[in-house]
Length: 325
Ligand code: GLV
Image (cartoon, rainbow, N blue to C red):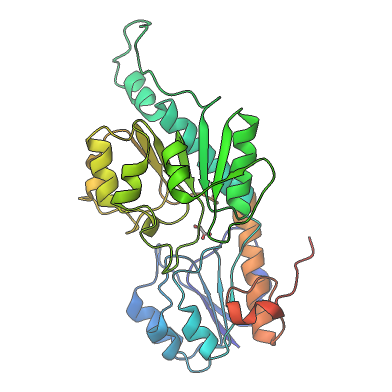
């Protein structure tokens, strides 16, 4: 069976795969160009991809013998799940293993935005530090503040636990209306009006695209801070850049963007009080190794016609096999 991995992955997971299939790993530094993916698709039984590969309906149609897709990511908004399901192709993904690591980054971004750490670092390096000043780089308190968590899956809940440890009050909203102990569940508009910090943790889907648009940004308290480690498409970035420039929002911290990598002329780059990271929510050594292992397990299960440890197609979820850890 022929498998194409669009990236070399951390750890030794690809070695297990190489023992079982004819594996080709994209030798380039970045994402394979689309034409290359389509050309290789023609002969593939399995595709091991990442969130920057657009596995759309055309790509799936170009792969007549494809039996399994596995993405080394929890999000699957880059894969056309309906097209895969229509062909009976399971799509593996990696939930669970990255929740705590992503929550760590969300909290790091929240703290960095609240206490202006990036500005402070620049200030020291640029030699601007003359003496201790009572009004220098004043930020916002995290302890005692209210955090609104949008999306109460594994990552949202892990962020809420951290917030509780910091003495924050936690409000939560999710599309399913799920209830979690220690989190006050409120309507989305209520959460936006009452929170000092808002952190996004919903998947990107047609129903959530643009969830935080101009109107929602307008509901935020003056001086609020927005953190996004989920997907860029959840937020109207132009409206966010305006809210920051106009001083209505105190700050924002983003790990994800509508267009990745962020284009050099993107208006966000000119926005004040914005902490930026290059989509590194799950980027710890241990977590990336676990994600690679899980994505290889998913792919091998799919190629063998067995239930996947974690299958993203809603139609196939009942066939998913719980992962033993
Ligand atoms: C990261 O964004 C992921 O989907 O794994």
